[in-house]
Length: 421
Image (cartoon, rainbow, N blue to C red; front, top):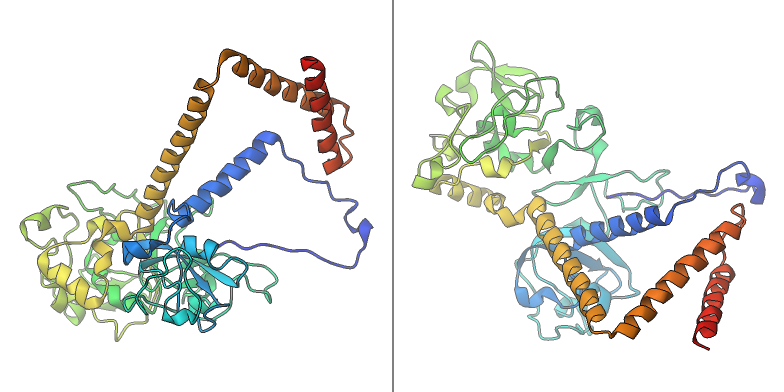
């Protein structure tokens, strides 16, 4: 989530006299618009917002909105299309994406409100899951976003398990500097797991250290995930790793335990394992994951930051798959559940849409006769010359007003009239 900054004060009109007025070129403006469109497409998953998604059932991932005007208790969510067609002008909370969700718009939770796009719906969607985000609250602090009482809005990160959003200084770390980032501040992790959800995923501690994202870039570079190997290397994340004397070290708490405290020596995953080890039914870990997963009861609950490609690393044998289901995290081995895949599909849809637009423009031009094409090209050339003339004579110290733009188009109309007369 990104925040906005506002400014105010009682300094009057002269308060900003020393500030330079920001200027942008047309190219920069267009690039900004395209970047905003891309960001919107990534959040919406390429959904054009024209059809209610209810007919698609419980989608693996989609953008969801909560209308507090219709359901103040925040126990309902609607799809993109319904947020636009049925809840325009309402108090709507944007929730980004949610997994395994079906549009609630117009069901029994909405009283007399009927969905304009898909009025025939079941009274409720029992598989849907709702948290305090649907009421406009986030993090362990329960604050809204944007927070009207905050001096500065700060970014939040989303847990890939509970899908709640958290302030970086509210996730149990000593410092936000512990969050794995590169020198430019970009995240080095693919997914974040909050302290409340990390016990569900303690089985990840059985995997090589490189499943964890690390801040230490001076150490040996991570091996790339391939079709035949699991990443191996060193990590400073809060996992359990081997020391030189075969003692287990919790890298977050700095505590040492013997091999027998949590699991046997054989419980530690090999540094390298074939990604297709489980294709013939064999477990990558070579153990019963249920009986060897470290217990979270005696350990301080800490957040997890997992490295890019980690979902491709974890075992998919029958025993492990059943264990994931028991833990309520079976979706972790579903490629379509990940944000990375969701955004990848969104980009593909966007590219296809742009190609279709370009094709429509080309078809339109091809449908014109020679005289019509010449007229369009002449009009474009006239507009270019008129704007160039305007910019050459305009006082750059003054703002461009609607009257200035209107005058440009009036001059264009006059020249066209003269050309045709």
